[in-house]
Image (cartoon, rainbow, N blue to C red):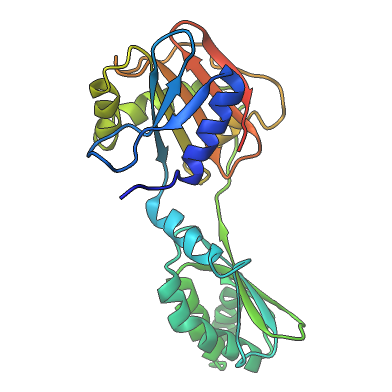
Amino acid sequence: MTRDLSAKEERVKATLEKVLGVRVEQHDDNSRPSMYDLEIRYEDRPWAAIEVTSDADERALSTLGTLTKRGRFLWQSPRLGLTWGLHTRSDVLVQALEGVVEDSLAAFEAGGLRAVDDDTFQEQLAYERFAGQKLDNAGLEAWRALSAVGVIRASASEAETPAIAVFPELGGGSWDGGADLVVDWIEEFCARPASADNLAKLERSGAAETHLAVFAHLSDELWAVCSAIEDRPGTGVLPSREPQLPAAVGNIWLFTTPSRGGALTWSRSGGWQRVSISG
């Protein structure tokens, strides 16, 4: 059974065709096990093998995929009188959220709450201790239920058709403006046991030229790496040292997801370069 290219493979294919001026074709069509993903078809020299992979929290990617299928992350709720926006962890389990969300939001509305986060109820608990009296805690219990499944904050607004929108937080952090951390990251990534299969496919390909394309998924952990790959201020900064990579990898292409248009590439012969992505 054949398969279509993934969105990441399409992006790699389009980028390499644009940057290298070559034809890139699908190789892994499910006709055999352990096939590398793409193949460069040069006109003047032998073909090259390309393997595409990612450094990502697969549960977070699954969550984003599930929410995207809903269309703009929205679903209607006739039980509610307002539209609610929920900011969540990137790996929130959609099924677990669905089990508690409408009851919780209905409790907020009944209590007159329109903006809810941990601080909201920490203030309530502090007042209870100070005043020595117990307040109605339906809202607190509703918040605990939402917080337990990954909601960070919730806010409401008027709408003709009440609905719920979910906005996974993709991360945050700081970046020192340099790019050497990208070298540390890609060396560590290639050394992981989880990367062994990708490297083995390139090694078994028999190609004299090999390319490994890696997508860094935006998160707290990879915030600085993604910032350096994309070069968000547009300074053109490049890593100052060569990566120490397995012999199976002759070229690397580093992307981010979601992407703002920049990528890094390195080859044993040409060193580091910045490129614009396509696709």
